[in-house]
Image 1 (cartoon, rainbow, N blue to C red):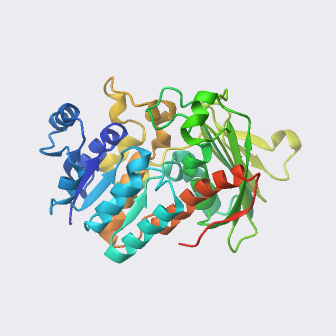
Image 2: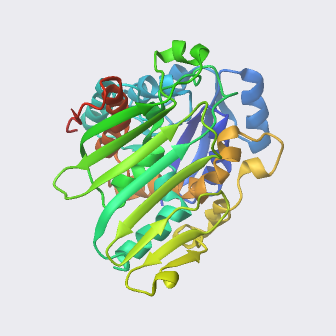
Length: 370
């Protein structure tokens, strides 16, 4: 069974994936890349990874690297993805795919041209909550899906210097991904409204005033639409990535408070009996035995180096080992991962163009076909 040599770029959030690749039967955790040499060596020594790079371009020149998993700052995603694809590497990249629609197009084209796999590592579509809803849908328990809703609210004060003032919809894949991903739908057009105003010192970074952006998404060749909303600054709300689905037989709603149970509504019961709180099961059994423990435990549980995205994100719903497994299995089976490059471009472009819509008072904007 072929093992793929994996190189991880960016060792903040990226370090979370090292122990998963170390244990996965299809992976050889081959190399790490980090500009800060002291941090690079500290993590390399801790995990016994000998091949280390402070220079991304030198990593790409290494013929032993099969896969590049990018966890760098948002503004570097597109550039580094394109460089890696054109260097003949498969690419997994944390969200979002890019910051412009043209960059999304370029990545899709590079993936096709080079015959290399690309996967945007969208956590929510591999969270235990999403997998639970997906299982209900596939068993027919939800009936006909009638409407989808997603949200991602977070207080980003104190995050690195490229975050302050970021337009909420520029980081929308955590709510766009699940509403599109459950039925593998493609967003056709979007209309978005901005609401409220953030602090003046935040506005100046991206010329984006909105405290909240809420978007309606229409899906291509479907009778369905979805609503997603985002906030990043100056909105009082506990961290929440939510995904809700309304079906003809059953509907599922995300809990309002982190750690509480989901609510399943069943049609045609006596009114007081319609809602029921349900504990979301874990889906470690979907995974190779070697990495099953990582759905409930990660590297940041094991030391003091806690990354904000892991603390606020509640471990991202146990998604990290599922993401790794999906990408490696896709490589081993020579198939597209989910989400692949066109799907990732569609989801990312929804957010980019939703913000453009908000700046134009809710104007309907078409999503390009990829």
